[in-house]
Length: 71
Image 1 (cartoon, rainbow, N blue to C red):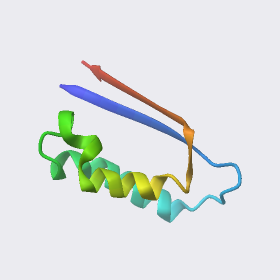
Image 2: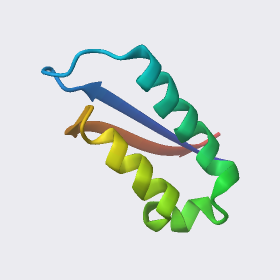
Image 3: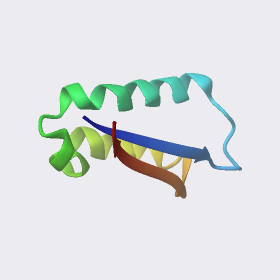
Image 4: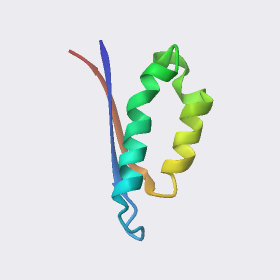
């Protein structure tokens, strides 16, 4: 099974919003069930694009780290 781990750092000029962060995490967690072919088509899927648009104002674009790994 392929695992996808993504880490974010909130922008320094953005006030923390626990409700928004929880909502964004829930949306990320549900993508696997919502996008068929998650391993290949995820980046271009409208749900992923909408999530990314909502993440960008809150998190610094170049302060993300993503790792794919198998167990």
